[in-house]
Image (cartoon, rainbow, N blue to C red):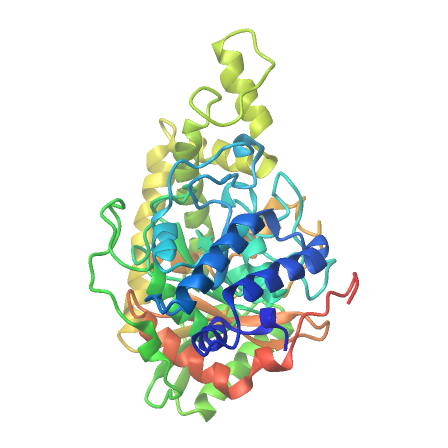
Length: 492
């Protein structure tokens, strides 16, 4: 195996035993990026010189017997909406094309303390608004399983890079499925933690009451490791939970006996691809075989969740993006005669079509005369959705659904039909509305050779149950060992 093919926990063992150097490891990733990223287009920018220099220093410290973190010298890719001091944070938007961050996001601070090395910034849908990474202002990212299909979004670069071995693990952000859906479409593991478990300080906001940073990894073990590194209370984030830190690796137990899993029938009906539906039923059967109790249940939130999500998310996006006005920072038009022109032309030229669409919708639902009819009502429905989950968690440890109703779709197949694109979020948005944790885990390939992922959802701050069930399933089927991206549509 090549160095870039190993999981993070396997790499950590090799570093500890001095079987490999951090420099060779980091170099192997940049060699791989040169080889494959021309096809996948996952990276907006890379930090090769800085990364290799840091790797050399860590190798020297390790050689001298200095105390290092267990994962020191292991590289990571970062979605380009998280601030790394001294590097560009573009959000894949013309609006921030030349913005250089003057500070580190809290998750970046935490990784720096562990001497984790940054490979670069990863492509995304502009300001995290999209489900295919086709809305980037710079270029479209491709799915390594079939380069003619999308990798999902908005964290498409983060998921595609892990699937392609262009990074051992990455950070993404999830507002309505933006970690889990691309993880499913790219055949990797994606976790959206409980709202408040991971600090959002230094994450460029899309919808503040829904956004959450989380890991995208090759397996469940690496997901637990990365969540350990980035979780914890942060005084700089007023929504950050003050719960004591947990060690999620303790939940990596190969046993689901006694666990109760609910299978909502509404998520397996009309709109869900037949191969996806069949795959989820097979996952349910596998869990029964492994000793869990799985039964059909009802979670009738789908018909409300999508409308509720897009009202709340667009309203908050409209408010958050108001700061990009051509005056304080961000893109400024050269075509103006007065102050009004600066505002209008800077935003018209700096934002892409999807961002404009959501700002307009959000401004409308917050406007006088419509606030009560839309935004206030959506917040009431949000409470109802949370209550529906609460009822199910009185009976079940976990809820099992598809992550996405389909596998990866063709480039441009849905980009001209926003409503159809929004419908692809039907399985993931209820989890964000309720602030719950959810993990997408790959289970099989469809008849076209594209990955299918399933979603495990737990009650707030019960990620330990997800890790236990996810790890057990993973050990039983060995998806990663048996399936590799083919880069079909390009060179193999």
